[in-house]
Image 1 (spheres, rainbow, N blue to C red):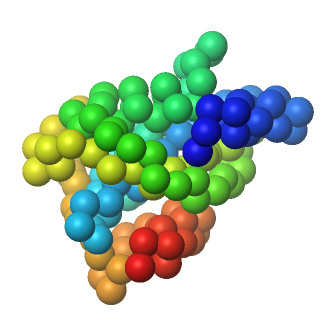
Image 2 (cartoon, rainbow, N blue to C red):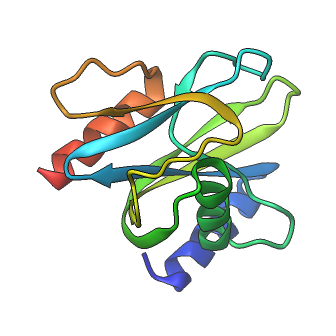
Length: 147
């Protein structure tokens, strides 16, 4: 995704009244995707998700994606390989959020270092996925595009 397209997403979010942008990465290594589990004491504790998080004020989506993946997994993004889409939700605090998700490749995928989650797993297309709703849809879209 080109920077101009990322900027278009940010402009559309602002026009739509999005209060908090969220970014997430579908990290694919050899047809397996990394999922991380939220710590029990965290909001939505125990849920599985893609690495990612909130976009800081003044930060663009690409920078936030790279920062969040590095912070949460210790992995560096080598390439953003595709945009999988976005979905909207209201946070527990009542904020209107929009999550943007990209497929990415990383360096040294065998060296996952969790800082905010309590577990991780790698899943393939044929596996059972411990994801709900929109995340499961995005994972299937990724596997269809990659296959």
